[in-house]
Each structure stands twice: as C-alpha cells, then as structure tokens.
Image (cartoon, rainbow over all chains, first blue to last red; front, side, top):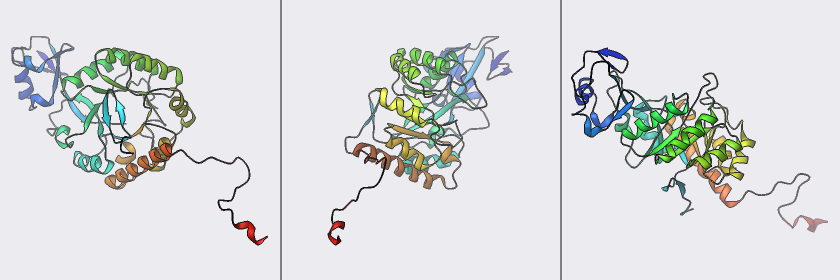
Length: 65
Length: 255
C-alpha cells in the first residue's frame, strides 16, 4: 500500500502523474512530496510509487491570519 | 509620491497594503484585490482535497505577487518543508514564515522563526518573517537575511489593533528593513496609525473577512494606508505638551 495524503491506497506501481490525475488535480496546481522529498514536476512520469511510500500532494488555498 | 517604492528582496511594489486570502469566498478575492489595490496576497499550503476542485490560483488577478505562508508549522524544520513545497508550486520565491507553537494566542515562536529565516534566505527565498515585536529578534532576522520584518499588532484574527505599538515603533526606529505590521489590525484607523508611525506596509485578512461589506472595507483600508503613508512622508506636526498656540496672528488687533 501507498499512503497518499494520509490514506492507504493501492497505488504501488503508479507514476506520480497518475496519482495526481487520479485524484482529480491538475499537475500545474500541485506540489508532490515522496517520503518527504519533493518530486520535481519534470519527474512526475518517471517517478513510480513503491510499496510503503508516503506521498503528499499539496496545493495553495486561502490563508492569511 | 511617484517614486515611493516598497522594495522587498529586490522586487518593487507601489501598494503598501498586503492582503490575506483566508476565511472568505474565492469569489470575493478579485474584488478584494482590486479595492485594496493590493500587489501582494498571502496564501496557505495544504493537502490537496478532492472536495475542493477549484484552485485559488484561478481567482487571483494577474500581476499580483503570491506570498505563501508557512502556517501550520510548529518549528523551523516544518516551516522550511512548507516553503520548499510552496516554491515547487511554481509561483515565485516569496515566503512568509509563520511558526506557532502556541494554539491559544497563536503567538509566533521567535527563535524558530530566526532559524527558518536563515535556512530559507540561504536557499534564495525572499523571506518575510512574522514575529513578536522584539528588537533582539529583529536584529537576528536582519542577520539571517530577512527581506522584511513583520511584527504582530495583536493576536492573529483578533481585530484588537496596535496592542504592541511602542515595541513596533522601536523596530521602525532601529531596524533597517521594511517593518510590515501584520496580524491584529482590525480597523482602517489602526492601519493608518501604523503607517503614520513609519511602518512600510500593513497586512490584513480578518479585518476584511469579518467586515459587513468586504470590498468596501478593502477600499477603506487602502485609503487609510495611503493617508498614513502620506502623513508619515510629510512629517507629522509637533505636539505641544502644555497650553495652546494660535494659528493666526490677527486676533490681537481688538486689544
């Protein structure tokens, strides 16, 4: 299993791009961490989620004080 | 006033009113930016949520510089992690460092803020740290490579105004970086007062988000910030500690 944004998911073997798009997000609107290391956007196709990985997909939202 | 430029990390701004984007509808952001005349807007970085398909980036007018914050960070390490993710989102090098351990008053952790500022400045970020107004910390932030110092006026979201006024004045007088008053400013008159004191800019979010008419309040703040800036630049008139002084010289002719 792969933990994607805190949820155990059967995503081992999928590329980062697939994970992002499966979640319904646009690649140009998110940033991705794999095991606390940022995955550069140029590597979304070539980076493959492995069993036990922890993936975080983040985006901007409203915030101030 | 033409060349009254606010310089942050080598970037020029003409607006001195920084806007937050929290606690109100995405649909109001465009009007808020326009009425506020804002050129900088803060954003937060959060886990992507499938329930929110809309991206805030689609609602921010072009030409506005994004200022991601590190809210949610409890120490320097978490703030650095959020800042790096924000930069990876592809919207520039600005970051507002916010580190809070205290959840009741939301007061910033000055020591961790200095640590995060040092790391991020070395990585090329334009670092704007939110801090409790303390002169020694402000000096440490200067040495750490901060682009500005952002002291709080009163606790975040409180709308209580310039509770730390005298200590902000010390920073304005002693620190050779833009001092941007952030957090707690609730009314245009308070924003104006901060600018009269010599603050380089004011940042607001809750004052607008909790106002009855957000765009109108944004307009009021814009005018207040502008008025305070002009008053500061022109030099405030002196105060007489005792007595009065006539403003004309003709009243004596009857005697």
